[in-house]
Length: 184
Image (cartoon, rainbow, N blue to C red):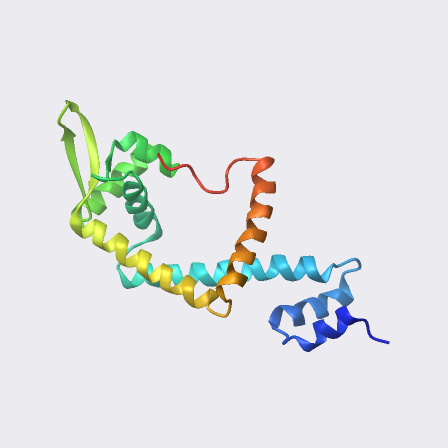
């Protein structure tokens, strides 16, 4: 006799990950289908979104490192400026590497470098209107890709999924650093 759980599972549509689990379940003793399915789906969905992000960046003529600089400047709040040292620290790159990257972004018209009014020895990197508009266009593309990905879920299901993932994120953060970098 079939249990209600397995009958409910068999009534659900099968995806490529179900086929993967069925295949490897025969090869890997102790494989837990729910665990393997959850982790594999998260990995593949994140990869899917990453591909969408890369396509959006390409449409707007940006490389990932360029977008990350624009994002970090935008996260500083108005007037979207910060010192190069703080920018390098936030991005986790060597200051010399950042200088070369800022040169390229300035030539593209996406950022400015100006002396700070209160201390002419200090330099500030800022977003230009073109840089802010480019950042916003990429964000719009990402938002659309995320909405499309999660469109099969209604608002309640989406809230439930977010709550479940928050439980996992909190457990990970309890034992280590935050998953999302602090924006200052």
